[in-house]
Length: 120
Image (cartoon, rainbow, N blue to C red):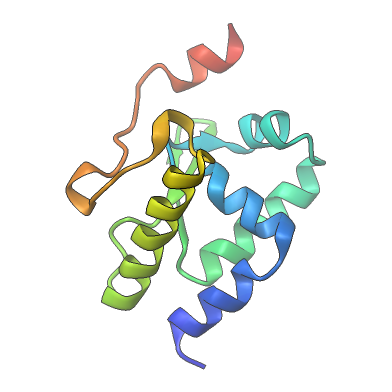
């Protein structure tokens, strides 16, 4: 199975789709996603791993924090197109924080104060 088809299969799980939509906007850590979606930490970690394995998400380690975001820089053009399509759909449906990106050039940027916002 090619990667885009695998990605579509992973998004077929409703909880995984919710987790994916949560990381389409700004980057987040597991604690933020747990709080936002009111899911258990092991459940969120499991779904993030599945999304990462499918190429839909990337993680970035920053000290003791691990940040997750949609894989806007996916090497596979079809996978990038799928992520952009999902972002447009979620933005139109109002499912993204800040409305979501409209084009690749507008994909969300990291904010240095993400963790500070979460802790306050």
